[in-house]
Amino acid sequence: MNIAKTKTNWVPILVVGVLLLLAYVIYSGKLQFQNVFQFTQNSFAPLNPDNQYYLYTVAISVAPSNICVGSSVTGTISSNIPNGICTVFVNPNNAGWQIFANVNLDSNGIYSTSQVISVTGTASFRAVCCDSSGNCKTSNDAMITVSTCGSTTTTTLLSTTTTTIASSPSGRECSTSLDCIRLGRNYRCVDGYCVYTTPETTTTTTTLPQPWCSDTDGGKDYWVKGTASDYWHANIMTDYCIGDTLYEYSCGSDSKFTFDTYECYRDPVHTELGGCVNGACVHYCYDEEGSYNIFTSGKVYSDTWHLTNYVNPQFESCMSSGSVYSTSEKWCEGTTAKSTNVQCPPEHPLCQFGQPGRCQ
Image 1 (spheres, rainbow, N blue to C red):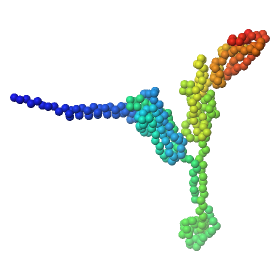
Image 2: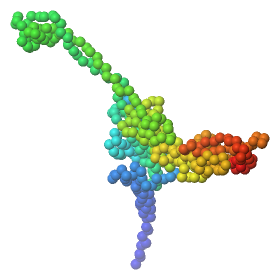
Image 3: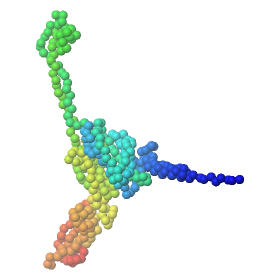
Image 4: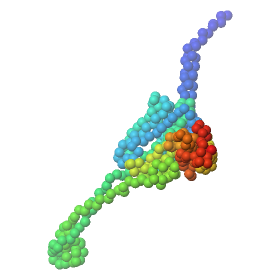
């Protein structure tokens, strides 16, 4: 009895295996990006996601930020996430954040688009951009204000009466304007007679309010907390601190408020002095001697020295001119440091050069 050996054809099996492997790779890649943006289906909590990657930077801008209806505006996202994906959120007229669009960054981490705006109001934009591994970064907020600009003109038709009197249709005085209608559309019944009225055109011009801006601390005063508001923005902005960095709001030349940052000085030795506190930099002065005293010697710590480009702290030292000795006295007046040279009195005439500055 002959048993024939069956020859197995491995080619179809190999093809099926390759296709299954390829499908798994593609599906896994989709899941990778899908997991990054799964939050878009449920909530807006990821406006500031927990997986903020410290090496990434994302900035969103809208230019120009103040436009008239019918003008074009350009939105740009700049990042160091090549080929990343961004979810753009919008907060129109402070009504709450909502998803605006999902966009793809190019190989340089850039996305830009332009469009014509046809509605008025304000809107803030924020972007959350992620790489394929789910590492994300949240951008700053960019605001746009769209207004109606210039003057509006309204044309109104008014009528003035003349003394031209026509005969009424029946040869008698009229009782209503219906009695005068056969004479023409511009005839009216006035005081019992059909009177012709001449149309006039009157133009009324309404001028929009002039832009304005106000700042309660009078401008860029880094040592006073202030609040800025203007014609263009519905909200107001108050100076605030992040660490010792002050975010100072003030009015620009275009009657719009803007902000800049300023590093408040904190004493390097007495670190409890100075810095940024509650939206303003803090002036300080600390005298080791406690007060003005030419017979003791000490150091004075103050941001006054830093602001006037002197070394902080300042030491008191001795000086001499021939047989006349002086000390460079330092002291505090409130939060301001003071300095002067004082000649030693006859009862304590000496102040050794190179020694601590005090009269002996």
